[in-house]
Length: 163
Image (tube, rainbow, N blue to C red; front, side, top):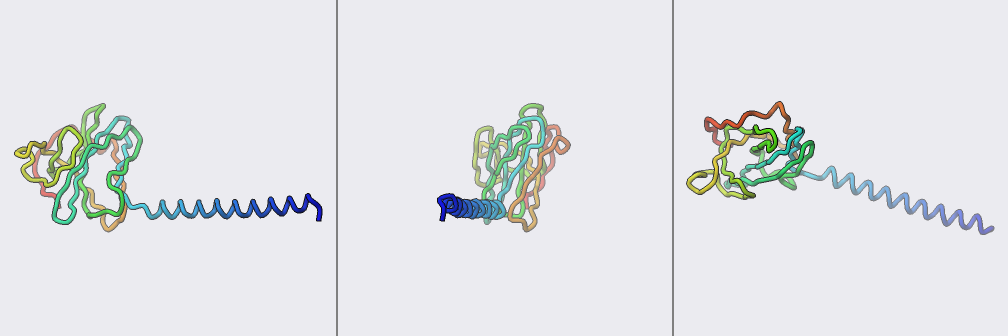
């Protein structure tokens, strides 16, 4: 056999091995992406947004914050399979004022926080903030889209007990 044919066969084997490796990488990436189960929030506005999330894990309520989202970006707030059906979100527009709020009151503070419990916020030195409810149904992952149309002026009245 000539050297040219041998080189061609070697290159062909290398190309096949490389193609198989690339196909395996693509399949692994696709499987990883489809297996992701997260709670995400996307900021579909032109302003910077601060986010807090509340959820019940077992019998204990927890609120966490702050995630800072630039305009037109998304952030994963909770990684892994969802631990609850209902999540509660509060968002504030840093640039233009306004908020994404609701009537489910939970504890927050100005600085980064993880707070256990939603009762007696003020007596415990926290702020009492109205969150809006997100019903994820039986989904393993969920994405909330914050838009200008959903935003309201900062007003918190009434009381609804979170589920």
